[in-house]
Amino acid sequence: MHNAQITAFGCYVPPGLLTNQDLEKLVETTDEWILTRTGIHTRHLADPAVATSDLAVEAARACLAQKGMEAKDLDAILICTVTPDMFFPSTACLVQDRLGASGAWGFDISAACSGFVYGLTVGANLIRGGMHERVLVIGADTMSRIIDYTDRTTCILFGDGAGAFLLERGEGFLSFHNEIDGSGGEALKMPAGGSRMPSSRETVEQRLHYVKQEGQTVFKYAVRKMEEAALAAIAKAGLRPEDIKVLIPHQANMRIIQATAERLGLGPERVIINIDRFGNTTAGTIPLATRDAVEQGKLKRGDFVLFVTVGAGFTVGANVWRWTI
Ligand code: UT7
Image (cartoon, rainbow, N blue to C red; front, side, top):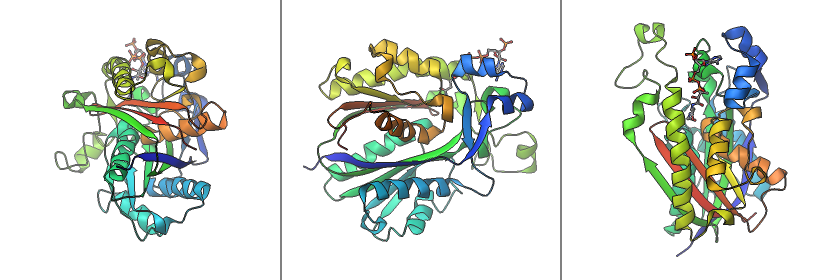
């Protein structure tokens, strides 16, 4: 049986910035509250004409360029997003066309902040199944389109961004531990715009096309499940927490990341945090943090790396890989 390895990565964030000082002018908040409660300082925001497929295409091109590979050689494209350009066609179809990936099929994965880890798990298993050799997994979200910039409890948290990993045959994928728990669905959701509550003048007036979150509920669940999923994936890989060279967590809140690292006994030098610069980019956080880990010299060929996340759904995901770039 073939295993999968990560052979290239690429990221993209739009140039526009939204700082805590900007938010102080929009809602009743302070730079100090945002920094101490979340760790976020700035976020990148896409221009109105830019959509998720645009971010995804830029990340994909950066990833393919790193490998020196042409898009036509891809077998599949998986787009992890909760902010697709539209319901259908899928963003995978839009990106496949823009890239000229004439040999690829693909589809979108909806798992909110766990999207990229689920995409890695699915992509690795497509390769392990033997019928795919090159799978591009892209996490891309334009959260600014579904954020209510009058709601101080959510608008401070999110940013826009994308990242891609190229998966090919090789010895990299060690384990996964993914879970969903739909009983948490009410705690983080976008109520309107689907078949349950189609778009109407009322839903627009009631601002129901935006992210609604019970912050404390999600926070407590995330702290508990990040640790549980991480330990389960580490055990399935036949490793101990101390074997993990780098923890690359989803970037939702600095305090969740620090609690997870402490519970796993991993010192700050082994944990990647870039929430201060990007906020929560949903499916984009893990590839963006991976790029930082490599650029900072913290993640090197042969290291064991743990990706772990909790998101809306609830969704929970953890992967252990050997880094092979
Ligand atoms: O990636 C998807 C998963 N999402 C997450 O993991 C997010 C998890 N949740 C969180 O990160 C945190 O719960 C938040 C950052 C959203 C909120 O932080 P918190 O420490 O849980 O605050 P809280 O909701 O308990 O609110 C504390 C106080 C409240 O005021 P009162 O009722 O004590 O008077 C809020 O109204 O802080 C107030 N507050 C704010 N104050 C200034 C809430 N948002 C703000 C704000 N600026 N932006």
